[in-house]
Length: 545
Image 1 (cartoon, rainbow, N blue to C red):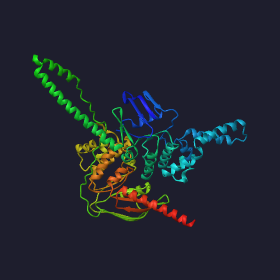
Image 2 (cartoon, rainbow, N blue to C red; image 1 turned 180 degrees about the vertical axis):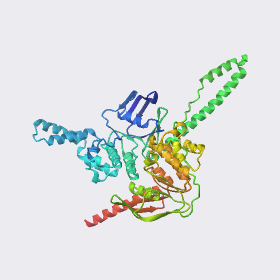
Image 3 (cartoon, rainbow, N blue to C red; image 1 turned 90 degrees about the vertical axis):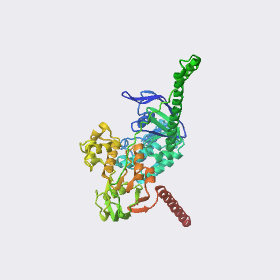
Image 4 (cartoon, rainbow, N blue to C red; image 1 turned 135 degrees about the horizontal axis):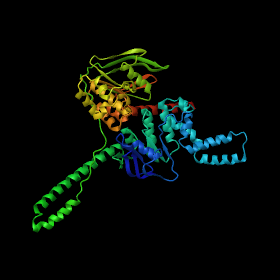
């Protein structure tokens, strides 16, 4: 168990938390939610001991081990992947290394023997003999293949490092597990594996995530940060939405009844305060009036952008034809003779772990990369707006946000452009920020503004939910659902894919799998196919033996 007592954290004069008293108990997974800047990551850092609170205490039950997802991708560059994961239980790792050092000595003393025996006993108690196999199981579950297990961390790309650091946090069955955005940069297969791991995890989990599907799947409780307070709600994210809205509705109804009562009391007092026979009743009502207090209902600090893609032109029947498309990158054939036709009703999600293949196809369709062979043809009625996964080059100028968006606007009108910026939460002075200093989330909102202002009837989006907060993801999700044109997209957000797409494509070993189905149906069918394949192999093996 982990709890806080009168926890306060200030940044200058601003209090992110004020006298927070909260208890996180064993067997529960808590989703920590709140608006951008509410202090979710700060709170986790305080719980993990990385930050000191201004006042108050963090209390952890005796002999409990706490583990957290680290964000420094370079900290373990001089260690192997397996060693990094095992360092998730630092005491176990230290024992392993001390044992190795003793056994490598050329002269082995009696003291060394006694110490080695002590270490071996503690090592066995901690299931040390299973450490490497346990670490390997975590890595493979997250999609880090055996070929990487003895590699140095410095030789891994960023996506693999994220998975290794997540495996490190999960290693060794910690009593308290703190996860800050664990699904960031994970493919959907790895997210699904993590969901199952956390569902079966029996200790305490506190996680920050912008993925609503993930929170619904794994959380037994929600901890909502708003206005420096943390309120606990039983149930998952959807239950929190219903509960919090119901609570506000009930408070408003209670206030309405109190206001009616106040009005009646005031009217009675005004009519009879000067009447001698009614003076006692008037006095009694004055006292009753003084006791009535209206509930304070603060509006949430959350802000939702207004995202609405409106095509300037209705799309025709001929949208996109792709014929025998191939592309090799760094000696790997990521697209191998790909062919498909997109119709006017299609909303296509590219799924699967092959990020390079998806991004390559998006770049080719957007005209930013040439295929090695094959071709593609857009219909004459189509106009495309492209959201790249890496938008760095879009924001290298000294332009303000207003100047940057104005260059893409068909109407060179100040009010028109500022209207778009306001809807995307760039109000007032935010519009004069220089684009080269924007955060990841601000850049994404700028790119979405650019796509909206284009009036295109085909949207090509490569991981648009990265860097967005939950409110912006919800707004984008709703906009994609109601968009009347064609969408070709990828997203790590399960709910966005499931609620938007009516067609699923996956590129495996360069070849295309193409199904007219929802994402959940696709996953279910794929799982059945894998089970059938495994059963067939087992049967063949049994026959051979």
